[in-house]
Image 1 (cartoon, rainbow, N blue to C red):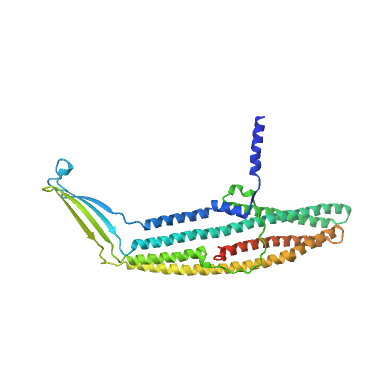
Image 2: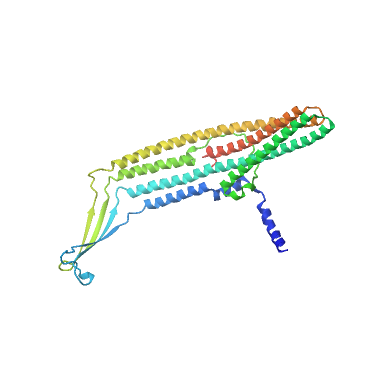
Length: 413
């Protein structure tokens, strides 16, 4: 009795664990924002750039030194308390004073790199969001294919049962029944393949949203996006995160070049010291000093040359990134137009025609007005067109998502 009660209490938990988890695209995006690992890694890069900005604005720390001098090898350092030792104590404090605006240039460069890291985070989000949306639509397509494969297998199953009855009645031959059995086996194989593709799509989506353990329960619940015939023009691609990040890195490279040139402005080290002398009469004295570097062997030509080369590379990378953004936007627009035209042709004629032909063929065959080969051909055609239509809906949905995330910047954001 006790075990029965425990089983009854655990039953709702087991049932809940097996309940399909229906996700809208918006819900999937919310889980992705929270659990996506690529986004988390990109956020750590921003944290590192924030720390670099703090370090760039810091003033160099002073240095303190304590020197003990005038220790005699013959008499040693004497006896008695520390203040009576026969040696000199020198306490010195030095502070480096940067000149030439070096600190401001470091801050300027680090600030530009921080902004670039933030744009990198946005670009990672853009790319991963596109991956999420396309993976979501892949799952939606796999569900449709699995449903169509199941319906097709059920149709062949019913046809096979009818064929056995008609064989007993002498309406068809054993050869025709064998053909029905062959097509039924093919339909079963297609259903098993569709189930495998569905499971793979569930695993792919589960990884992106951090739900690996519930992968087998995930269901894409959104309908396909409707066709929208409107004129599309790409937005201001200079606002796209990858292009913006490349532009900010040019600014950072310019600051680094200016910083390298600023090394030719000599920094100054200021120092003050206190000296306690115990060699004869105890005396205390104070002093100060100034030191500057001497540009004898070089004047930072290598550092300046490297900074100039890095600046040239940053400008070229910006040009390349912008050109690639234009190319990807144009490709996204072309893919969207093609997917839209294909889906429109399928939904406005071809799919309905295939369904009517298949229904007429089933009716004609049931009345003995059509041979088996024509019936099987009509079934295969319908199955092919249905799968093609489902694939076209997925292609359109993914092309629309790619357009919005590749080319539509500056207008809708």
